[in-house]
Length: 361
Image (spheres, rainbow, N blue to C red):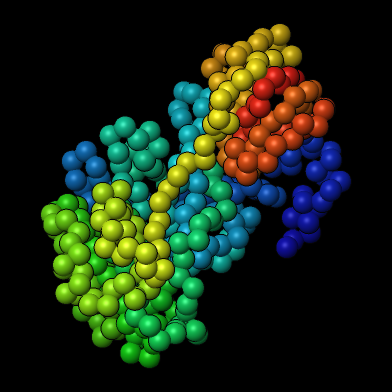
């Protein structure tokens, strides 16, 4: 860590920058300077498919030095500022590149969705564009490496863009010198709607052709079938399996495996801001406005009322939206923790009122 980094992360500087945090001011000088939060610059955008209405692209990102790296199979929250709007949209995407270290480049492979404000803009992103990232998250990871290969086979079952975390795992194994003959043979079963929709087609063909004990099965237009799986991997219920894909496919996989403890599933669930039955009133003391508590985050409810509080990541990372709560109880929508302390600083993007609440906005 450089001297400048140590100073930027010191308690003294944090106190001077309160309540917004030092990153709020560093970003004004250089968007790629950060002491705590993670940003990333788009280095390259490469089309994987050009399916009408749903193209897929791989983005190469250079994160700030605050990026701590990721384990193969993890995902990241991506924040994107919408043009002409004060809103920042965040979505989760699996990291498709091999496991990374601190500050190293990563890739995201994104499918554009017709109604996806974030995915459409990412697929059409230009080099140089700035994104906001969380640190890597998720436990859908491979607990082995070439150094600790184990003896049991591995199975990946994926569908559509659910291939990305599995590719991260396979790429990591092959990059790090994996050889299935000396450890765990790998079976990769992927379902795509058509050959034109197949992501990583050339790379998968290359992997299949290599003498590496990685067997690749691509299925185009066919649904997942337990009978086929039984033919390909007779003891699949006793095989360490990672499955990721559309909900319908995952339901079929879950049914096929029953109560087998060897199955691991990846399901993205956005943080819920619901606190059950929303009660009480949310009062914005600084603007003398009040609204019936809807159960959403304080930031969302303020914006719905027409207020424009300052914010940054909208993910509870950067502290730009930190505001004083005068009274009442709030719940952190990420952790579920509640706090009723008076006159405390809260992050309004991840805090939802529980009953009556007064904030200084």
